[in-house]
Image (tube, rainbow over all chains, first blue to last red; front, top):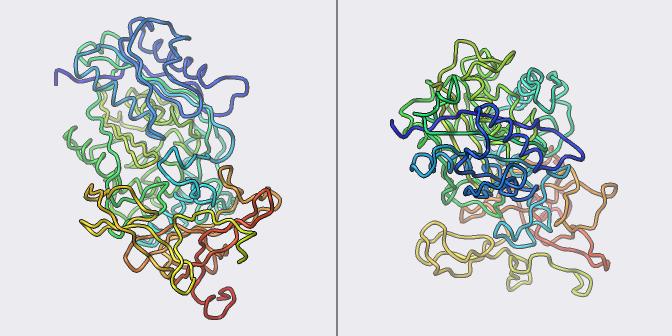
Length: 383
Length: 154
């Protein structure tokens, strides 16, 4: 397609905890790394979209990078902020209003669980005051119901956490680089049953940035550009089981992940079995398991067998979260979705080092999910 | 409960029946019949704004559950500290009309909670205000506890 868009540069500030370094500084570092990777300078960028949840407005980055007068839009879509920023830059380039654009995300969260305010989410104060508004509770309850309906056991939850730690240990930029054995995960403290400590990702800090341009110009900047075959963002429909819901409807319908995934596959003209390397939102072990099926990579209930067989390992037929995912990298909300795209880009470029998926992967897939029910999917191809 | 020393956290969600028993209240779309808890300003299924008050009663079954094992940050207002915090159950209760209402549970023991078990709602204390009044909200308990007058010991 003549208006295809390509990734020509990726950059990150390592995720983790960095006392004394602001979230914005981490975002600026990521953008500079991405510009360096693309071999361009900030004044060549014609549009930018970015977001952070707890570290200030993304457009303040222009104070660090240069006041060049470009349109810079702040995005706030929960965990899907990165995916939404990326989709917006892609749309801007496709529309012809810019040739080169940047998507950036960064964050710096306080330690511990998030503490959202009900009124920011259209809810009554008592929902938070009486102790019902915790994302951890939602993930645990959605996981328990899913296990009940599809016969998944705790074994699968443990294996997801174990594989994330194994891949994180291979990733020099991961926050957590220690591989857990089965018992360590199974015996970690019960945070919100059925989910335990090592089955949850933690709010963290970090930055991620991606430089995109019109595909017809891409080879000028990057030897192996990564083509965006599709990018879809969808919000929830009436009746889906979403975070921050004081009640769920009598009739349950599919999650926004399902609609975003279908739209992305349709636009790209490929099938789930064509994908060689996969990133799924893994705020917790249960979410990754649910997302495997919601994104079309297996049937509901088939996940446990796939995990036991090793199909989701780096050398398996469905390599998932090869960089350790949110579980090993933590989740700086604004940056997290872009980290996924960066990992897939490195895999497609053959630059993922010891965690490289074998046999020159051609197609990659990324999926984010965020409150209050928004999902972003991209399908990427080695250019 | 003495009206002088308790504060109901969620007055908009509670309605007392003719016997003085607390029940849960929300609303229902007059056009498509969908029910909402708490009351919604518009129907998210059919987009109608024509909604009527709807009482859900106080009996249902456990649809899913977890146990909150750490002290939530603000806006949680129980007044507990990390040292005094007591874990509490949280679940979605499927009501007769099909809606699943999220609620605290009186039980925080994984061995005593099972999907599908009958549950009954009552108002219970979950904390104290800085002035020392009891903070009260709706809490579902295994239905047996109503019959026996004690907590389910199964």
